[in-house]
Amino acid sequence: MPEDFDDLSSMTGMPNGVEGESTAAAFLLLKACVFGDRFLAYDFYQRAHNTFVDWNVLNPGWPWVTWEMVVYAFENLADDTPLLAMMVDLQCVYWKRGWKEEKELFASLRKDFLFKAMLRSIHFRENPMEIGDMKECEFHVHPTEAEREWCQNQERERFPET
Image (tube, rainbow, N blue to C red):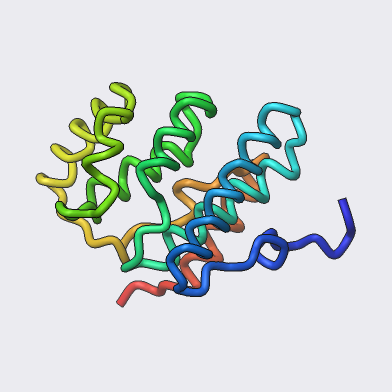
């Protein structure tokens, strides 16, 4: 991996608001997560995973995660992957009826995704949350506790409590 490889966003083209290109870039990044996981390329996997999480959590108001991505992720990643938890939370917090792809892909959604979404919906009904309230560190992959603490501190600096 090149030394200056700090951010996969520059390789894949950070989402720029153009729906087709942004969705394709996000799906490519998700596929990079699966590739890194399958071939035990941990650094690559971690960067792809965390960048995908950042795109989705730090860019509220536009659903980067499509149903097709949900199906792909739940078929190819381990059940305890934080990225899957992020997808479920985004579903519960942001989903709106009438998305153009929903009818075509509803039948493809895995039962484990639907079950997790049902359980999280109960949690969010009792503890309402806006999409902008989600914190990316909660869904990141951290190889050490020290890195988790550093990430949480970065988050606190960006989003100081008032």
